[in-house]
Amino acid sequence: MADGSVASQTPRRRPRPRRQKPALRLRRLAAILLTATLGSLIVVALSAAMLPPKQPVMMADPVFDSAAFYAAHAGTSRASRNSVRASHPELPESALVPPPPPVAGLNQTQTYNAYIIVEVGKQMKLPKRAYVVAIATALQETRLRNLANPKVPASMKLPHDGTGTDHDSVGLFQQRPSMGWGTVAQLMDPPQSAARFYAKLAKIKGWTGLSITGAAQAVQRSAYPSAYADEEPQAQRIVNALTG
Image 1 (tube, one colour):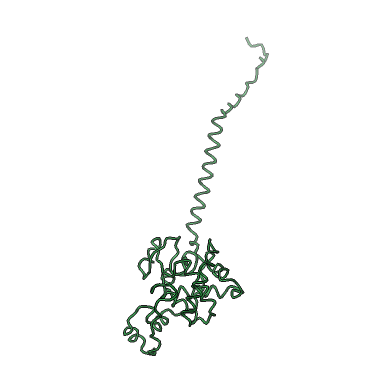
Image 2 (tube, rainbow, N blue to C red):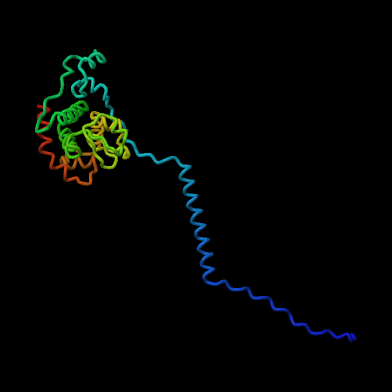
């Protein structure tokens, strides 16, 4: 029977949240970090794909015409005198004098290349000391041989005197296309390669006051700079023989 009294009610307690086990928390944290890391990598990859590839800083082309050089030095290019005469009838006969026979302990191929280096220096109106620096450098780098490189397939298709495998270095001076020296074709062309060496040498302030080794190293940035000094005596003999 209802008598109007209100029965006391005990409030219900809210259930306590269950604590996560430490191992579960670590797994979830690792998953979050992995997701964030993958997201960052994807963003970086997409950004790199959207940006243009970084190109090496190419050196300015020296004002040098290899075709005209070869035309004026028929023997240097080993071309037929008749072929040169047909393509360049304006050249005087005196311009078609072949290079000298082997000098200073070199073979004929080395002498051809040394002759090219000296003649390019003359054409660029550089002093005799520049020829010695260039010859000493080419002696040390390649023994005055125009080297192709199997790592640079394009170089193997061009005329060469042998092969080398140092990075992507090619040519007489082991200049590297990836470091901005020029195209493979330019660096495998002895006159053009020599002109690029001289052009960089001429830009070095006070190079004429440097030692042969110092001047060569300023151009080449070799890991073994002292090696150029070993070639200075023969380089001087070669230049003397080729310049009279």
